[in-house]
Length: 282
Image (cartoon, rainbow, N blue to C red; front, side, top):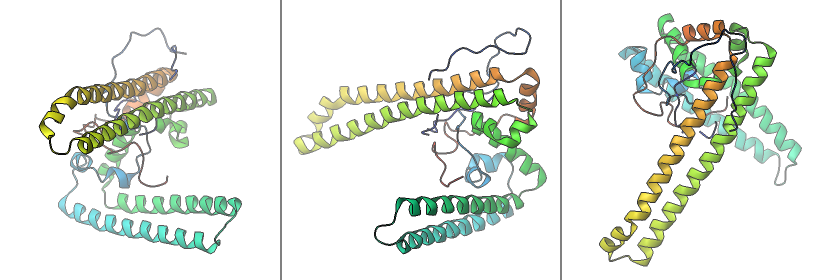
């Protein structure tokens, strides 16, 4: 159900143990409703989604709407830039050696202001869409966010989730986040090691590049193999999270969520949100 895994590649999302269908009749093992490589496991606000060409195509954005969208993107960039400058000025006003309490209070205040700013920007983006487009964007957002959508109070209320269900979902999701962070750290280490190897090879043999390329072929193959293994491991972690959370929901809750997701969205690429982390505070 909660499919559409991505890279995303995120930073976010294990000891994901077996879970039974709590209050349903015994069920046959059902194949995932969608592809298993799409979900980003990160919050996907409207302004972020509308940066994606596949989303614009799916909701059938008109040329005039695209022009309005470009204007909004420019305005949003300016607003975030001004906010960043204001934060830097506020930090300077605290003096050369500000206390940790003052810095914490400033960051908390900034976080609240960023959330308000993000909500205002999202609202302005949604205004250029017609009702049908807004509904479809909401469906796509549910598909791409995956389990994180079930951490939102409004969706929990619509699905009538019980407190123990909410707690289990949170615990499973956070365990998945920890596992994905472990994989991401290994991936980053692999990338760094590969970059350092290339740098050393170039410095040690700057002129005889052809022999060096031959020597490095096996090491490069090892790097690519490890990269693919880690990507597959991350996908499996996401799938495990989705399957286990799916089992916590009742049959009625799953059916309701399926209807809310709408028709399957095809991003046309493994990572529709480009990264595992959002650009802005949410």
